[in-house]
Image 1: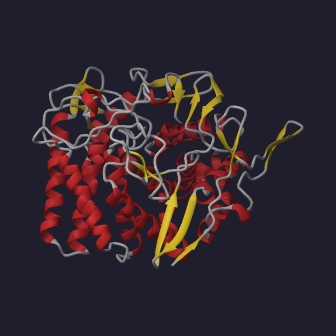
Image 2: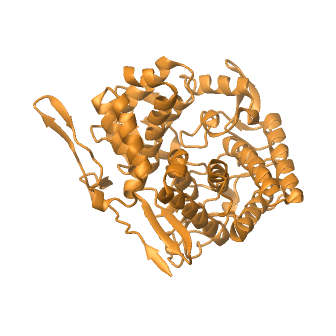
Image 3: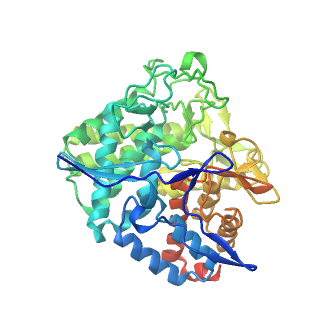
Length: 479
């Protein structure tokens, strides 16, 4: 038996040819902005949580700046308002969460999109079922193809990327192998279990999926020099490159895990992607805890912990180097032969986002601080400054484009009140009056932006404001 909650793709095609939310409400009365909500009408929202609605009202009472209050109200619930398809299938919740203007679900994005709502699940049964449903859906996806990063709601649907090699099986949107896809699924399950104490969703199918995830991560250490994975895109994109017949550049097996793609979905230069390997370190430790405490499987628990320790040891040996000007820092990518790339990707996981994403026990704090300083300097080739703003960019959207997500993560990981305020003001100054965050904007002109409907970055902005409300309410009031 299947019961469904309606799922409405609320988009129109704007003059720029990109999808935009159908509700537009940045109006001008003389020279004074009128900040009318950009949220869809109540009847058109794809999911409603009373706990989230109560949180919006509570936080808005503290925010004194009307534009910032408006941005928070628009952005924080954007995932629930526009991207959720919730069902009950065979008496189990099932939640499909699209990324926004692409009608597919990324394991990474879907977890990150709902993550800010996790502290509210014990106050809202509907929201709790949404999380259980997403865990169930991600379990199905991993069992379908553990190497895939994005999936369709209809698991019989054929991909638009039919000429990719190998052609993705039905239900798979793209098959770009990214370590963090599996790590985010683990993060969601572990986070839900720790928040609620509810282990019912960690069922036999989940167990199969997690064992498959660990097996896949083990395989991609490529200790025998081989992998069953390859990826070639015939409709060539300059950033979607996996050289050597789709296998990627050579690596020396040193205990690290290969990732063919970055979280931006761009191909890696060197296959050992360090932020994602560190993410795997924590994810494997989380699995170890679950298999010990919930399943009582000591052997698999110890295997997961040993795997985690092995990867961390390799990261510390091969990814931390002495920089000419900044002391010891993390490389973004390495190959085990000694080659390293000292950049970052403003998507998550990133080097800067390590402090946001994981416990300090899994990374070197001194190296992290030095790396953060380097990445926010003119010595970083992808740190851009212009008339509209400044911040980190990356190859994905081209030179001179800045990611609001990077600015948000800079604020999230900052110990400086002045830096946090500066970041928030940058975000307020670069949304181009739309009331939502974007994937990127041009450093000299914020009206030149990509992705009007990118739910993850909207919800992440809401998470930042919620963090300030909980930890620095006086600072939030002062903006």
